[in-house]
View 1 (cartoon, rainbow, N blue to C red):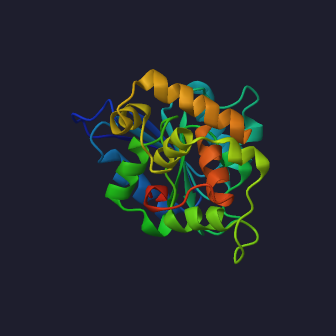
View 2: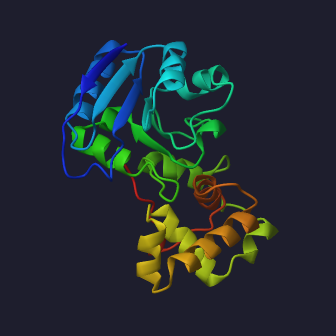
Length: 235
């Protein structure tokens, strides 16, 4: 396990202060540690190469963000009997962006996705800054895979449950897919943040999902988002 001091800066409120990197490949791990430590607002970066070691760090220390290599989150979860820390943001590094790249356990609030091949200092900083419960970030290939669903090539089916979304709820869902926060959606629509929260709650209920990330995944898979507003913000 290695810990590096991060850079101080003015954006500490926008970025996680304490970052844990769980990646098996040593070269990638060292590179991520260096990139994360150089981000203003990140105060410390700890690295591990095994899920068991990371579980120990999470048990002993406060961690704001976890950067996971492919498959590591699924290995780590059984080692956390009390579950992950409530406010922990998780950034999943992906080797591929096909329909089977993401385990359902990763589709949770506060989780984001970044292609390992596209991981630069700027991309890492942007992805870490959007590990919030009201933002969604995923690579474009993953978004296309979810949009296509298992039967790409034919028009995606629209179950009866999805037709209950009204125009305003569909607009809110589209803005969620672009990665906008409640405050940004409120400003875009000219309504209050409370109104946005109410619309989001309605969307989750009508799609029968428990969080925003899964709502966006379902909407993409079932073809609910179409037109220029349906573009998913990518990492």
